[in-house]
Image (cartoon, rainbow, N blue to C red; front, top):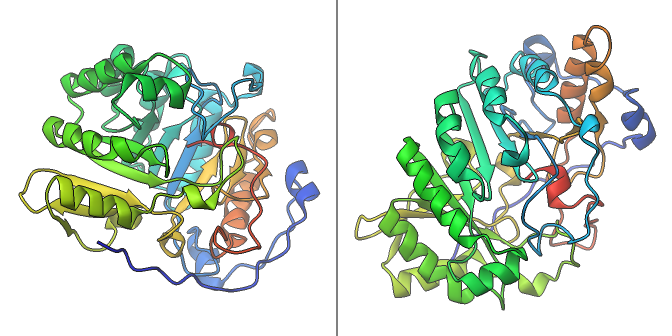
Length: 366
């Protein structure tokens, strides 16, 4: 089964002054009349942004080879935004139409007392969706407190069920704890649990069908993610195991897959249901079938840098506006609008123009 390619918009990108951005002095671009009046986060390509991904820490208890180096140096904890600072920024963001937040890391469950932050965010009435992406290692302890705090959407990263390959991929012996965490999440009452698996040619082919059978049996929604150029190791285009190839494997070895239509609510995954009615699988084909034309996401790093794309080369430092005697609401609003307005048409994986970000995934937020 083949996923047809999407056409990306090709328009010039406005130049940004990286020095000014990092210092908090913003070179402002003129706003279109509609977004200026409504305050909505609409970019030059008509994409309306209502989704904010927030990294709460860059620390992690795994060392996945495609994500981060073994000898990584983490931010000092004092550099991280406090829960109060995060909540203040989110309260500004909802004024501009942000309705969805996802907490990420690093490994977010390594952030002490994370359920308190979830409680603070669920108290913001404009937020209609709060999710969490975790590697699941600490989920056995935190699933119930997170659910009680109001969290309802959960993504758990798991690339393989095989203990030896799990150890090789993550450089840690934690597979059993991840599986225990998944069961703890189910017992806590999470209505929607997704399993995310990164697919890499030459490394993960033998894991695809077992993972799919496991998720079908357990009632988890499986999402395969194409290998992207964002990790610590040099990216090799030939290692991309395409969504189309994965779909062909699953259709052949488990059951035929039927497309479920357009991406739901700007979601990054193309969704497919098994023809026998048991379960579904999603494909996040960032390389072969990018969703840039539908992207509605902004990102905030753990230390307070606002990014308009996972692969952005520029950031805006929000922390100085939060750590004043009185938070500068106007400056944060301006930063949000400016970051959105200067967003590019899409990443350039498949061109010679692509420049890999200096940050790895754990430092940006998954």
